[in-house]
Image (tube, rainbow, N blue to C red; front, side, top):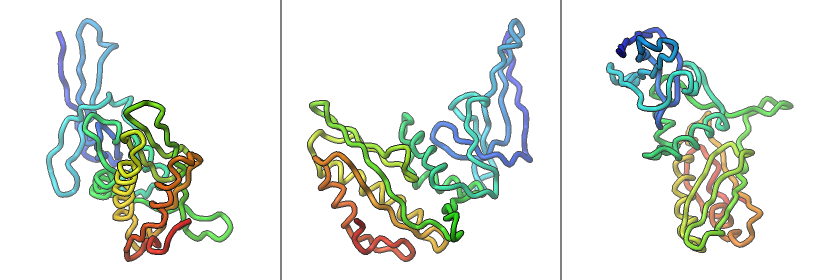
Length: 221
């Protein structure tokens, strides 16, 4: 016979990523089989943020497989955040960077720009290398390499440069809305070695984006 037990963790300050959501873990649900107690499974129960008092059982991985984002009150780098953006884009119901950032802030954490070792000043210019493949007849795939601090990804109609530009520019605007704060103001510059799509990269870098704190209005080369 299987038994279900719930362990409450009301004082836990651990933020986790599970099934396209960043939230604070407030408990765990255990499923124990009397005949095989060593095979007990546990699933995280996450909070509804600071505005909601309820919690819910995450439908994602078991507790031991659920990645930790940070602790409540901590600030993570864009590169760490990019790892969870990539995961979110691969969910059955994809999560955007803007949605994940909202959940991060709602759970009591935030982003922090890295600093230069020499001057200790924040890094405010980031370069994103794009890999673009359209070897398939109907669909192309574009993604940011692991060296990028911000993750971009798009499946597009092969050869359709406007389709690719539209998807990437929409994701760029998500990041601009995230970075448009005094402490996060920065600019993103795109590069690629796939010369067939250099025009897409040029359009992304030359499009003026009017923000308060992000240095994105002047063309970026």
